[in-house]
Image 1 (spheres, rainbow, N blue to C red):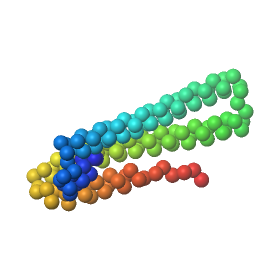
Image 2: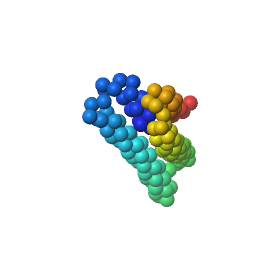
Image 3: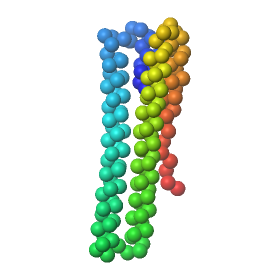
Image 4: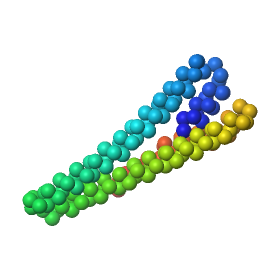
Length: 138
C-alpha cells in the first residue's frame, strides 16, 4: 500500500528521490508493519489458548467459584473478539494491499501527472483504513 504513497511523494518533488532510497525504505517499513501486525495477531491467539487451558485446569481442580468463572468467561470472550478483530483487520490489509498494488501496476501506461491523480484515492483509502480504531468496551 505504500507503493501509491511513495509514488505520489516522489513524483510531486523529483529531487526527493536520491538513488531510489525512499522507495526502498518505504517497502521495508511496509514489510515491517505487516510482520508486526501478524505477530500481534498470533500472540493474541496464543494468549487465548493459554487462558482456555488455564481455565480448564482450574475447573478440574475446583478452584473456581461461580463469580470467578463468570469473570474469566467474560475476559475470554473479550479476548476472542479481539482475535476476531485483528484477524479481520489483517485480512482486510492484505486485500487492500493487493488492490493498491494492482492499481499502481495498471497505471504504468498513463503519463505521470495522470498516474498521480489515479493513485491519490488509493493512498487515501489506505490512510483511512489505518485510522480505524478498535472500539472501547462500554
